[in-house]
Image 1 (cartoon, helix red, strand yellow):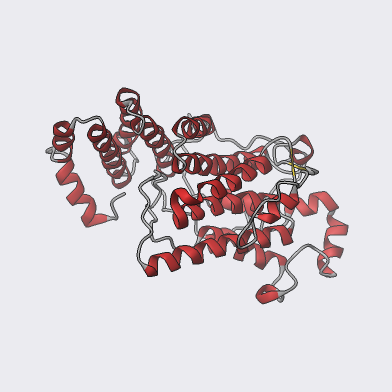
Image 2 (tube, rainbow, N blue to C red):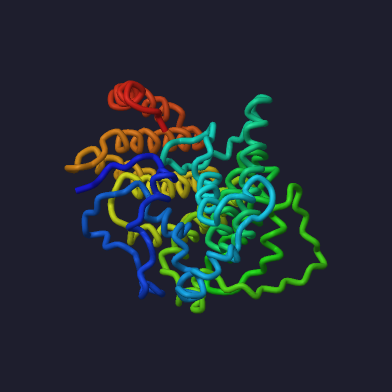
Length: 375
């Protein structure tokens, strides 16, 4: 049985959930779920609580309860002490950070779909201003992550910076976007990362100094030193987000093979996840993205294989008990749309037209328009 889920986790409700916190013996325990078992999907709220650690369970584990409570009472825990958040508690600042990264409205929001479109348009003046505002908000999120000394939030902020830079500048911003994605991957990985390099991306117009000598002294989220205090799932979630955005940045730069490699590296991380509409959208999007990288270099047979997998995920949601029919139909349409464009690139225009005008596609599109936004 599959479970439908909302488009994204509600930050406010997630932050008030008291049941999602680190157990004392969490350490490097693997919190991956058994994909063969059915779960009631919470829309990502549990993962959101895990990533932002609203109750500061990691700090408690690092410092011990007595030292942590003393630091809390004396207001010695890391937080922003200037600006508009100066009077907010550390916990409230974390909630605000989650809202900056995950509750900002995006004019291009496609629900749960993460299919990347390389056909970028600068948009009108209102759109350009909105994109610039969202980019500035992501930079503010990274600055706050640094002040809170939260590497998890820093990795997520860098991934979001990559996404919003591509929305704001398209291919022209690919180099900067890719730099952010690579730093997010570095933080999520098993090695070490340089906090000065990360702080650079929080500047309004970051320009790396070619003479700077890297000084990587901070352990990554998958580093053994870090896994003594946090579950490995945290690193996996951050890596998933960063790999997706790295693939998008490479696609925007026209590096199709490298983009495909980033998307393909993400797929095994999704295989261990349970079946639900939210995760199936992520799986579906990766297969469409991989198919598009093949289609853009003229390899339709390879592309079509991934489009068929993506369509099958949608068909399963429609046909299986407990599946979300709306999500399933939207996935099918998304896969067919990508296949149609790939057919056009392959000079198979007649087949593309037959696909658009098929007896199944048109009623499905009308039905979706009456119930929810088409992806």
